[in-house]
Length: 166
Length: 345
Image 1: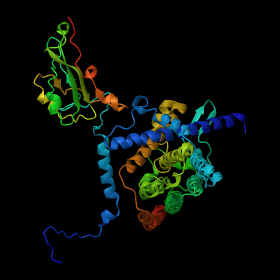
Image 2: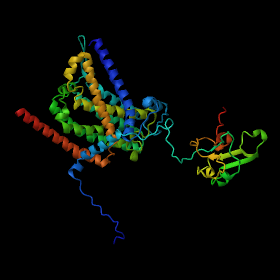
Image 3: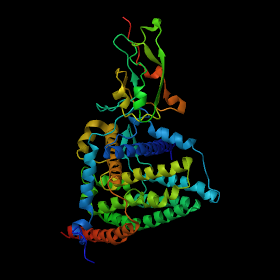
Image 4: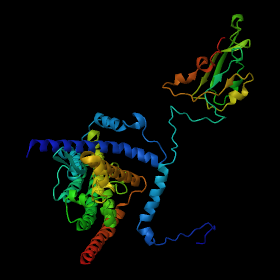
């Protein structure tokens, strides 16, 4: 049959030369290659002790930010939940009471804010949607767990630690 | 026979036995480390500093595992197999001279359990007995893979023993003795047999790889074809014994090669060292040199294992019967001619 393309490649199996047949030159060549790797730096990272540096656009666990006075930024507008393609975010809004003025920046806040880490795809759209700069995906890798319910992270895990009082 | 002689030999036996077990134990660790380094990895480093306790952890694991004996196996032989493998691996070291004689006061202590005049034949016999452990284990398992593996091991060992024996004959023509002690003494300083028998050494080391079932000749445990090979059905410490025996065999082979071809405890400049260190420290330095050679050989075994892919079975047989045996015979002829010419002139 006529070849349809010009990609056909004819392989010719030449008989082995003497140096190939006695096998030893190839053997020493192989041995020298492996021994050169013996002295190379190993690629392994000793994981729990040494952590690999994350890339600058790494997106990890979410954190809900506070402003410079230590008040929570989130106003429960729901834009993050709306933008979330995986529907991982749910929240319940509440009105701020006068005595809670130091806790929340705006008059409306999220009394419940939950992210299902099993649903989350870490796309970062919530971060982009937020008008208040309240949510960032700047945390570590979400740790593993045994039960599905433990992957629904509430405000206790998401909100940044309060600023230190001076 | 006085009692101190018996005690002395008993201590020596205990020490050699202990050393060969410890070396076999740490060979498993060394193998994993060498493999890792050759592949740009780290290897085991969790158990203790640098993972030094890894062999202990592995041994403990082996003891803790459930012992399974297949229902249709030959129970008695199934038990005997690993024990035999271990036994034949351990008795090989009895005739190895570990160092020159130590003199304490007027007492001369030989660093050799026994210097029998057919030491070489003894080693040869014991090493070839090693395959019986594999054969019995493979047969008793009543498993096709195990049986195939046992058959492979047997035919491989028989094939390579022929050329190994022939390469030894050329060595015997040079040394004129079978006593390992005398062979080593003849290689005083740098007169190592490898310089007189380079081809013989090459044949011997190839055959050693085959006899110890190490890569590239590890066909009896060829995972891709035979699952685990002859120890497929084994579990717990019985499996451990098989794996262990393999490493002891490697140690014995390394020792035999160092003794026969690389001068044993001899090294260049040993007379000067002996003169300056006295009759106790001097021989012990020789022993240390012997062990350095042994470790170098063990490293070489591992290095080769992580370099060369496994031979196909027909290639193995081809190499054994059609290449090594003619070469070994040619080696004998050449050696004989050279000896005749040297004696004539």
